Image (cartoon, rainbow, N blue to C red; front, side, top):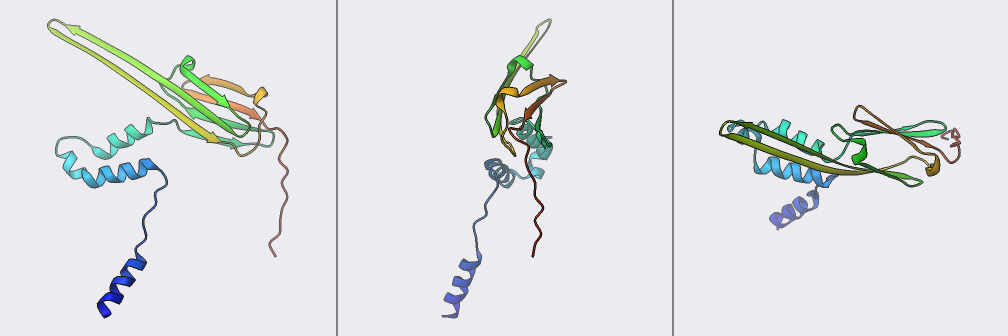
Amino acid sequence: MAKDSNKKKEMETVTPSRSLSPFQDMERWFEESFPRAWMQRWGWPMGERMSRVFEGLSPRVNVIDRDEEIVVRAEVPGVKKEDLDISVTENAVTIKGSTKREEEEEKGDYYRREIETGAFARTVGLPGMVDIEKTKATFENGVLQLTLPKVSKAKRRQIKVE
């Protein structure tokens, strides 16, 4: 009987783990399946390589909430401005883009051709309502900057905790 109560206690204390994103689940599964030491035997530094692969899936984005506007800055290195697609709603921004690079080398009997393509999409929620008609975008040195004027200046009120 004591054995049954111990099992019951064990079952009660075990809770399923929840991750914040499917990429965390995938990365955890990959690390459990292929330990870093095992992969490094063949000269593949797992941690560095995987982090570079996952970083390429979506751009890093900063959202700055100012008094009269919201500024969104996205790092999109290697993307040409004509390959960017930006859409804005009153409370979100979606940035899509694609890259394509071709490399070709020929020396005597040696011929090498590499084609690398990639695409990404990222939607970012905004901390306030914006006027989509007055939104401005600039692109310089791989950084996209969107300036989104707020519909109305956000009013703040200090609340005292009793």
